[in-house]
Image 1 (cartoon, helix red, strand yellow):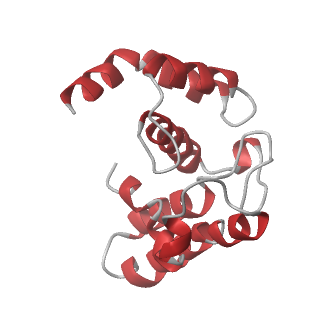
Image 2 (tube, helix red, strand yellow):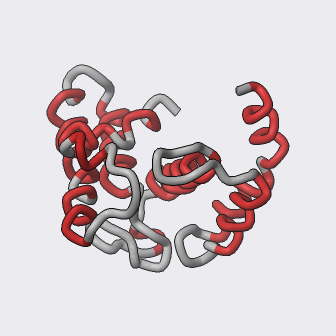
Image 3 (cartoon, one colour):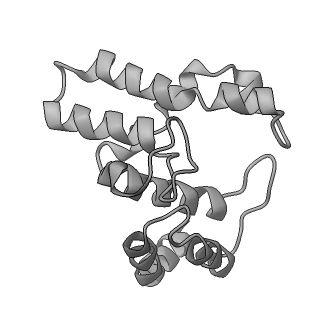
Length: 150
């Protein structure tokens, strides 16, 4: 939980005009945006090693680097699949997608919780490991409470 907020810290390495661009990225822009995963890893290792416990740095850097990998191997930055993706990054990926879908962005409105859970369910064994999908679906009541408190 302490490391999770750092998963996108690599976006500090991405030009602001790209981060705030409305609409879809061009293929070249998407390639540039994907660099935030490695940038985040490098920032965490450089800035936190020696300041935080080694286990924290390990978990945070893995979350940053691997949170866009997909269970089926179609993610980035290196195309890991299945259990080759660190567990902390597999969990972070689901939390990141859950947050992205439930939140309004400059390029899209927020999805409803029902729409979001359907997308996550449909991503079983593709984007997400089956047990992680189950954990998200089993957390529906807790997610509803958080959404109502906003």
